[in-house]
Amino acid sequence: MSDRTAAGIAEQMLDLLPADGAPVLNRVLRAMLSRRLAQSISTEDFFVARDLLLKRGRVGRERGQGGKVFLLKAPPAEPDVPLPSPAPASSALEAALMKPVQRYLATSFVRNLDLPKGGLALLQDISSIGPSTGQWARPDFMLVSLMRFTYMPGSQLDVHAFELKTESGGSVLAVHEALAQTRFTHFGHLIWHLPEESKARTRLPDVQKQCDEHGIGLILVVRPDDPESYEVLLDPKRKATLPKTVDGFLESRLNLHNRAALKKALKEDA
Image (tube, rainbow, N blue to C red):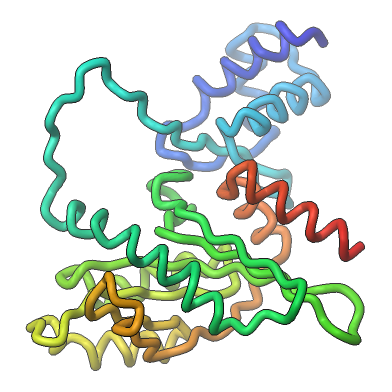
């Protein structure tokens, strides 16, 4: 199949995939393409076109049970003339928390993992990557750690998901949101901005209880710009997430730089 033909099938594939990011079985999407183009699309041609979209970062995939493909949200184009568009108060507050929380995770949190020499830690903001609805959750941050052992062969790969909430956003519902994200990762964390004098502290006992029951880590942020004010109340419990599920999550969320770094590290272990 020519590159031009593959590109044409790929464009039709993008048009047929649900805009909300809901995954579609490969065989179903191939049948939809055949109907759209009024001709049979071979399995080989289908996967050539799909792989083209994977390389371009336009779609993600889920392995196993026939395999599925889903649309990834493209980054918004910058307008020619910037127009003021104030975000809701809660969204604006959460956006302001992103940078200081990311600094904490990249420094203090990673140090506390106590990875042995030769270990790898990749932190990435994935708050705007992937479907916003459907079965794929959208954490705010993802941390991938690779731990090499001194005497045992091989290494251990752990994937952490972090859900960040503002002072008003911390609740039992937020715990279940963080729990849902562990369907695709090994560890789930709730990070809650909770100043010392906040009235929202009345909700803390219930939130902490739910985190403990579901094995979700709980990190309180008193003063976002002060790493010393971050308090880890609960460590998460490792989930037995299927390797193929974790693999698909990494493939759809890691940027090219982190993907290359992880592949290089894993290749060194082989």
